[in-house]
Amino acid sequence: MGQQASGGRGRLIILSAPSGTGKTTIARAVAASHPKVEVSVSHTTRQPRPEEKHGQDYFFVDRQSFLDMIENDQFLEHAEVFDHCYGTSHGAVERQLADGISVLLVIDWRGARLVRGRFEDVLSIFFVPLSYAVLERRLAERGQDSDIAMKRRLQEALEEVRHHHEYDHVIVNDHFETAVEECEKLIFSAVAPTSGRYFDPASFIATMKNGTLRDRRDDD
Image (cartoon, rainbow, N blue to C red; front, top):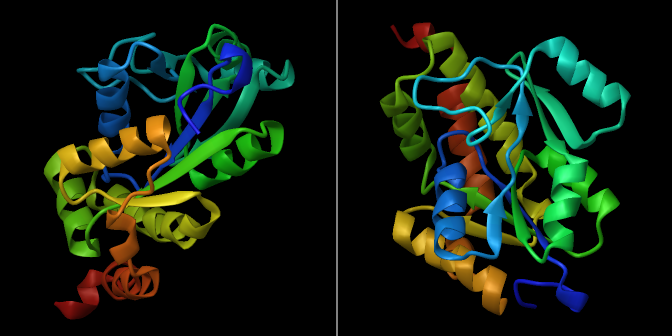
């Protein structure tokens, strides 16, 4: 399959991954190189980070406005993650698809399930880091979270990885350029990624359990 579905309509592509794996950066790199591909801009109730812009990174709204959108069935999918709400506008995505734009949805496994239930022609890709140690280092290097928040992200990462089998393809983001290239090949040429063949979920999850869910104070 190529980028577009029949009749010139765009296609939905789901990109999911644990926090810190680089899925948003990959999505933006793919969209930047292809005029008929765009990253869906989600609504969120969290505060913008210093480098983020309203309407470009997210639509930043208050919780009541978000709840009103839920009440009016305006979201294709929505979820609460780390005490903040995130949602994808159904109307915005439909307009993009109708215009022949393929849309990259950067969402978690819960949202992916909801989208698959509403659309037939969906390509879903799950990104994983090379190892748990790499994931932990990337989150630490971002410097955006307290120790407690980082532990929550790592626990959620374990849950994300447990659902990797629900996706059409797995890509290991060991080298950024390679991950982008594999993603593009999937979207435009339906070429299966090779990096995912070397992903051992059982070993990865076992390593995460040992490294994440144990209180580190026990090692002091």
